[in-house]
Image (cartoon, rainbow, N blue to C red):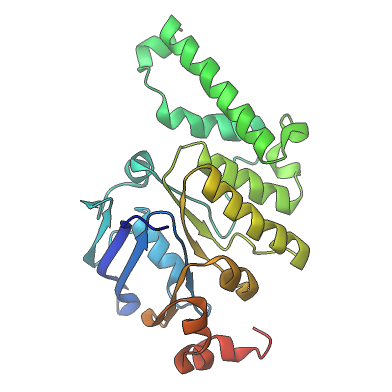
Length: 259
């Protein structure tokens, strides 16, 4: 059951010189939904994510999170407000352990200041212990406990994906943005990921906004879908609406008869 909008973009546009990567994109993601953003390569999907998460400031338009204008905020400020993301190309601290990757993300919510941390006051020690316990709990939840002391880059690809999502959840988000979470996965792994996204959404009371090329996953788990082509929104609605839209069939789904 949805509970009103958590994220809104109003006519956001991103220009790079003479190139318009995203043009007048208006989306609405309601609390508790799983919403997908799809489209051919180069359609502007990741650029849209980058605007929402503060990597880019839109050339024009506004972005609202829980009714507050977050346009132009830095990525760390946006994360502090409750938006976390993963990336198409996994961005872990590859030379650190699985445990340390998650623990670092937990530090975003650290209340102790530099002085109390440097002098290891009791408040800091309590917080540090709590964060270590939270990190271990997430690692267990994500099936990574036996790898907790392994270097992140040594994990199989699918487990690196899980670790990246675990690290995102360590920041305690309300809105989770997943940029092609099934990239590089085989059909069995993709099916498991679909169930896993639903599971963490319910358990952590998340709203999920994702970019994905695996249409089986998108159509199975999405409450609503937006379709981009050359930076423009060409369709939006339920999976059935999108699948039957002639513009989508021509621009994207129709490229592969099995899509």
